[in-house]
Image (cartoon, rainbow, N blue to C red):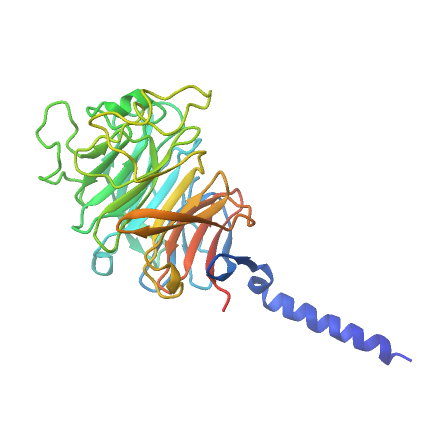
Length: 380
C-alpha cells in the first residue's frame, strides 16, 4: 500500500537534489539572436552597482562596485571580501569607484589602475590611481594618484571614467563635463575630454596641446559630453569611445589628436526640456560622430569582438545600454557601422560593462542594487 506514494516522493527528492546541485544551470536564461541561440549564465551575484571589470591572467576578474569596493571574482564565481587599500571615493549620484584596468606589464609589475570620483576643494572630480595587487593579502599596496580632473565641482553627474591602454602603452582616460556643458569647449579646464597620459601620470611629449597656452597638456580630444565607454580597436590600434547624449545624440567617436567633438555646440539630440542644442548637427571645425542613437540608449561601455566562440560576430562591436536594458551588436565594415542588432532586450537589466573573456565568451555587468556578473555564450 505504501509503494505508490513512495515512488513520487523519491522522484521529488531526486529532482530537488539536482536543482540544489546546479543553481547556475537553474538560473540560466535562453535567448535568441539572428545568428545564435544564446545562454546567459549568472557567474556572480549580489554585487552593488558593479561598474568595471578586468580579467587577470588566470581568468579571474577584478570587479569594481560603485559604492567604493573592489572584489576578486574567481572563474567559478566565488566573490572575495572587499580588497584593502582602495582609495576613498565620492559615492554620490553617478560618482564612486568606477573603472579598473591592468597595466600592459601586469604579469611582471602587478600594477592595477582605478578611476573614481574623488572629493576635494570645490566638490568632486574624476581621478586615476595605480597600485600593486597583492592577491594573497586581498589588498592594493603602494597606491599613487596619477591624475586628477581639475577643477573639482559640485554635483554627482558626468564623471566619464573609462580607462583604456593604447597600442603604444599610453593610458587614455575619458572625462565627463560634470554637467557644466559650456565648459566642454574650454580646454583650460578638464571638462568633457579624452586625456592621454603615461602610465606614471606624466604627459607624453607628443600630446597635441603640449606647451600651448590656454590648453591643458594632457588633453587628447575635447568637446565630449559624458563618455562612459571606451575600447581599443584590436585591428588598427585606435581608441574608440561611446558617450551619453541628452534626449538622443548618444555618440560613437574615434577621438583624434586635438580634435573638437562639438558638445554642446552640435548634437544629434535635444535637451531634456525638448529645446534645441546649440546650432544643430554640424559646424565647421567640429567632428561628426561615427554613429549615433536618437532616441538615446544610454550607453555603458563597449568592446570589440575578435574571439572564436561567436565566429559569425568576429569583427563586430558590442555596446551595453542602460536605458533600454540591452546589448547592441554593431556590424562593422571598413571602420563604419553597417547595421545594428539589439540583443537581450527580454532580459530586462541595466547593462553597464561588456568584455570579451579569455574563453571567447562575452561577460556583462548589470548596474543594479543587486547587480551581477554574467556570461553570454552560444547555446551549442
